[in-house]
Length: 189
Image (cartoon, rainbow, N blue to C red; front, side, top):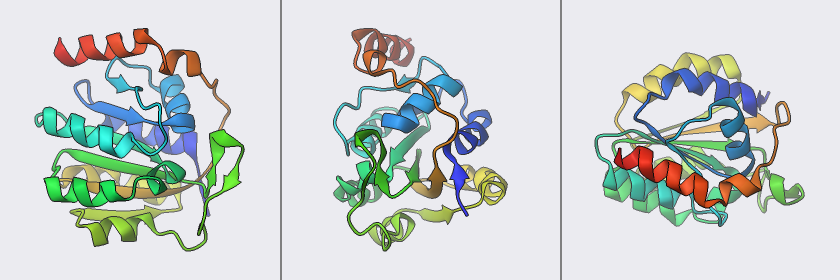
């Protein structure tokens, strides 16, 4: 069983409050921006693998805000060491969602190395995350979302996904000074 990405994101929207920071990458970012445009969407992640590290920096600098990292499995695979760093930092306000489709989606659907054996929830637990769960059913994810967000982080939810509805890939926006300035003003305002 798998979850359409846009359905998982739609389930998350009501849980993201006005002051929460959302760090999203690539196709998940494009989908999130279309589904939930907001000023505290951090889109300055231009290199694959950096969402978790950027999320940690924002978490540490903003201890009174929750930070949601909407990561790709290919992206996280390029920066697995961040799991240990996040856990070691005691990032109690960080909630890490890994959208696992086992391919590098925006780069041509190349398969991930070791894709059949990857267990990001298991890796997060081994790294010292406060909690980590895997979901392949939308109802199960929705039923557990409140509990995940009620616990102190770092928490990781690995979602077995398939693409949902197509959304525009707005590279011009995610790489723009406008996106950075909008976020900076919202963060400091």
